[in-house]
Image (cartoon, rainbow over the protein chains, first blue to last red):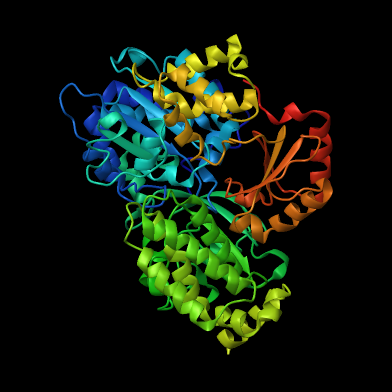
Length: 450
Length: 172
């Protein structure tokens, strides 16, 4: 039941090198694909696997691949999105740092499936040391004949290079990533045309997340059907979860889709429970953009079912009582944490990262940051809470890219579930200012548990 | 810096050529972000003459360089210290005590967020999520990550970088 498909060999000494990776079954999938599978066979296996985008959106990967346009004589490009910047998310960095050849192998398989001969990994500029690890691994892959001309006599050519960002969350949005890879500001493009038709240098392009690309390796090795048997329903396979916050064992975990949230937080196999024996107050299960869940909706859904680590179960109840699996950036808050402060912190992040193209996001994120700041620092008014609600509603859905939505959702969810704590900041500003968050939340716990 | 002094040494020119070669002919603008990283590491910051030089190297207009240099948060268009201490301030780091780390550094070095020490060695900057949430609090010094920070660890780092400021670069 408990399968590791990506991190199985993570503990093997020297697994970041080609030779050790190869000895542990590395590049078997490329060998198999180039010898016995057509590009369309691979697309078919990925479709059968039910693999969904691991960057946050959860869009079916096989379907995304099938959209790529194939005009005669126009090169196509495959890009890896390694611009991991969603607060709470650090799984791609872990994978690339520990087992870089897994990503390279996935890049070869995906590029072959899509008929791309020039592929790129776009990595955020802050991960400069990871970029160096990738470049060394790519050099090894060339030296061993996995990249370059006529790979292993198959007639398939592939050049792979890493390129870097320079500090911009927005470049994780695929059209902004493409703009950045063209050497421009990371302003998202209006869709359509979609990258599958007009992407990098106006050529058909597919962009996938690091973890999504790595998952293609076990899918080719074991077959799409076998992959689809792992997990529950439309949440197939395994997922990397990066956990942070007030837990005993933060870090990156590969989980089988479908384990319960309760097991993930409290069992010693995973996060080992809350640090210092504190009470769980809230959880953001999929990166800063997804709705925060109050403690009574973390392990159970609103209808009393066990909450599972799947796309569907985490979203159960919609935004009223659910959230999203998102990128798997799992942030846990204990009873001492202040939700108003956390929401202000996230709003500051989105304000800082807005590219400035669309007025609702450029202006709205700044207004939210300001209003939340005055609430947190004891200058807020009751009307401010409704004002915040109003601003976030006017951002959501009114921007070119999803950064606007991502900025709006955390504010909406915080007010929806923790309105009383916002009101406390207006009624008892001094109490909230003296860092006595515990007292404030204790009060909340009393009302919730009454 | 006068216009004439702005010139990469030969090894860096080779590095630039390697970045350009990653892209098809005529798409050399794609190497811009990488070349700006190289320029910033070498010249300390991206002055107007440095950006003009990069424009000439890539056969693009200076404005194309300026708009990129001012968009991305890692680029400095004003002088900074030899070692940039960039402390992550976003959610998961905040709840693990990033604010204390920032004020500890501020007091220790006698500078505020965004300022540089009088000896020109350290610049303190708070930055958004660096992808180390599970190992919080953390800071990035130049190209290096330092995680699970404590006051004692910050003392050590500052000591180490004061002795050897270039240690914050990984080297090519």
